[in-house]
Image (tube, rainbow, N blue to C red):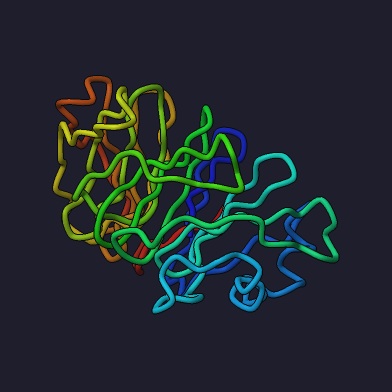
Length: 226
């Protein structure tokens, strides 16, 4: 589930049920070859936790010929250079809970789970390794410079300082009235999909003192779509 900004507008999907995978460009081949293949292919990577194999897929992102895919509480890495045969090449240890969002930047994966927030070193995609963790859980997330903006479900908008990837620190929380499901940041504003409370617009020019400046009532649950 994502919030998108084509041009100068914001696209917000209402009453979105479940999660979906975009089927454009390079992702079409990956979507056509079900992500359940990640679970079946996991036999080719020695499992580090035999009790956890496979799981729900709520998020993915691409970097070159690799797709980083949420599979239950893990981040799996697929080589998609051959779209007809995506191939599992690495996976993380189980994280704190089910993975809900992934953002890549500078050799790191910033990962939101239902039970916490993790930073993975993915400079070697075959060996993603958790190097930093915070108890601040959530769903969608956005990275701007040294801050991660995390849609923190009932906690609202969480802001995490990631200037030291080994020690992410929550520095602010803005309690939205609903269930913060996704966020995107443009300039000094964070746009939060807050389910039944619609779209919330929050001034984050000072990330340590976020302040809501406006909202739009979507008249239904505000989910998201990229």
